[in-house]
Image 1 (tube, one colour):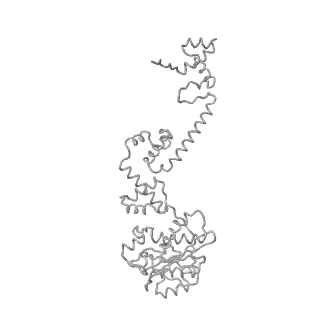
Image 2 (cartoon, one colour):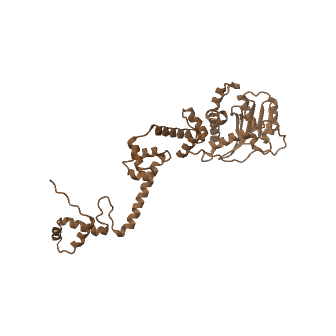
Image 3 (cartoon, helix red, strand yellow):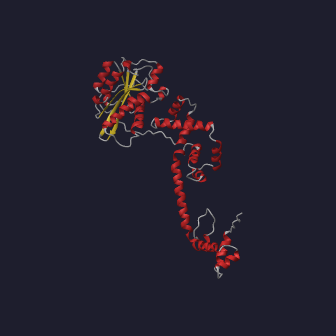
Length: 394
């Protein structure tokens, strides 16, 4: 049977080292203490190197007291680096709740101390172990899936959907959730809708043409297709000058039925080609109201004659009152927020034209849900109302 190894505390070792220098023979002194001479020599070497910082036992850093400041600074530096490393790797989980953070800790137990990860990520050490032992509840699993769905929808719709539209999309997927809950989870996930920004007015209403009265009078809901169309023009900056986008919208289903893109602000490059597209897409009954601002393009003789030819009633916003054409301006606000604002640099005119076509024809007219249509896309709205549109358009 092996003899038990003797253990000596730090005070004993320090006294032994100091006393050994007062003796003529280390061997004789060791025999007095009943220990091996090699042990005394080892204690002497350690004390010579670390002084009062010797004999701290396993798990402790050994250093000379005069080096304490350097050691403390090095320790803080290592701790900061470790903290940064943990936070960097855990960043995708930080806004997904404690369950996601617990999963991160479990996946990295072999890399970092559990206690240190809990401290850095500000979660309870005991709670983590209880979670690890008991697993995930059904409610927690539901919340995890819900958050993943919200984030997926938010990215699918290019960060432009707020809580209202996301709530409607979640309802379509079978989730029973209110707007306040969606807003809460969006904050937890750090999801922020792209903000609107203001753009300067481009309407030139200083002209000698006659202005039409405000027949529409802010009646922005139409009972059937081609009862009332609205139109507006905006500018778009490219890397080589400006483009001017003209749109015509049917108030019935909010579809952009006609649009044109040109680099001049004449009627022949703005409203006239947009009208030709709209006329090709939907029939124009006599008595239809066409509303716009008081811009020179809409007041021009060429366009007024065109309206007379089709038997349309022209309507114009009152001077300086942009709310009279609020629906058109709302479209341009969405257009600039959802397409232009997310581009980090100016595009060429060719590339911009391609992107605008995709936004209007593929996104806005087909896939985007509209609050004014009961959170439906334009095709869904028309299908639900079983309205046959002219010229085969939906």
